[in-house]
Image (spheres, rainbow, N blue to C red):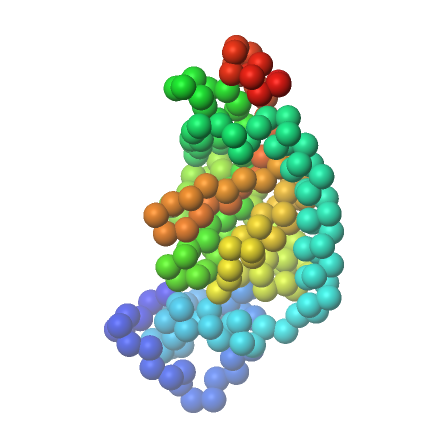
Length: 218
């Protein structure tokens, strides 16, 4: 979004129809670069206004979350049991390959195929979908656009908005939605300096059948 002075967010000009503007922006039919509104509305203020004015059927949203959790919970338990995902000494994910590696004593033990759902910032207390994060590689974020498409069909802000106020629990909820869409076998998150990166696991395998794997009972 273009601002003449990005440090200032002045009130919107006149009696602008906020809901009409939000609808145009979400559909991509408004040219923000040439729009006079861009001189008055910063990105964070747009996000705040969108949250206050979005109208949706919350029952649809809650049903979606409940069904998504119901789908991934038993699968995730099996994933943890089979691959001991919470017991390895080290994890490393690689965007360029879309792989999550669990290691012991410097040796890879489990390799998993992953797709990022998004990130949660403890600093701003916001959720950002992977598809909206320009710093992520296309290989690990492209699948998250399936959630956005679903959100557009159902009219759900949490699935359409690239970034919004949230909690860590929201991160798990959004990840469960992606998990069901991708028929995932598990979910996972890794810590960062200011939050967490959430992902789904679609495939996994033991790659070291040595003493460590036997110790785990694999």
